[in-house]
Length: 357
Image 1: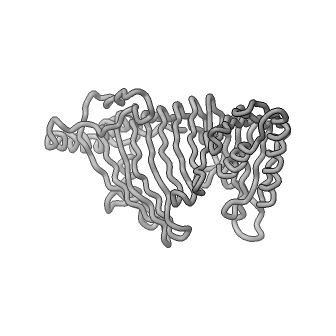
Image 2: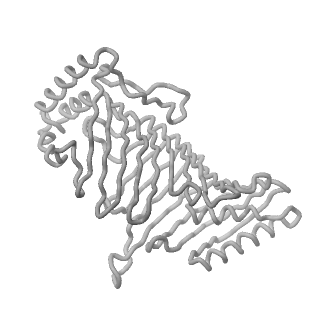
Image 3: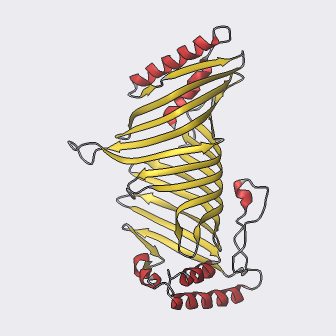
């Protein structure tokens, strides 16, 4: 992203017409040579540029960008990139990809080993646009990413070597990084997210998703703050916040608040993914908590408006119950996720059930 922004922002330097096309292409080629001196290789099979005194556009086809970042080799490829600039707003550039895109990350497990693929993914989108902006008096760079529809197919990652596909509708993201803001910050909204697999009792669709997070600290002591994550998954409205701190090992402290958790467990039990005994206990606790909290206990304020849909409230629990407002502490210690003081792995037996006949 930073490399692409450097390339795109350089198009601002084009000169007025006539001869604007030649000037724009000459500027692109000069920026490519400058990036090559910094270890980044940028290439394209064909480039064209046009425009008037104020608005300029350049189209690059079969774009390839590669370089080394944090000891790992990065490769980005796109069938076509349309770059637009406005000389009246010289620190703002719009980039619209057309066709397929791909990104890959290569690393060596240890010195002397052969280079292997650490991460590889394909991206296709409709109505996608990346707007980059840079403050004239600061090193910080900001970006806004929007897309009507976006499909992300992860072919390989540190988590899995199997194909994992995500689908997004109504993507709206705001990102900022660099010295001006001391790290990386983002606020991302998605009207609908389709997960690669269905979660027991929840399904595979998330509505009204919003995530706001930031990364600070230094390389040896990074801090990841999850300011807010919220959305509707099946019968559950939930929100999550907390932080990860990197020391000798990652430690994490999160608070999960949700309504409809009992309905999700009942659905999981009906599908054979949870034991009927667990469903009965959770339902009993849910009723007791709801009675204790009173009739004012409602779902967290999760609305599709978080994803820019005019304020329509997210769907309530499928069971028609509001349920109890439940707060769950999640902790990461020594590489193990825990529910309070109980390791999550110890709770897996409760979800060991035989599907009903």
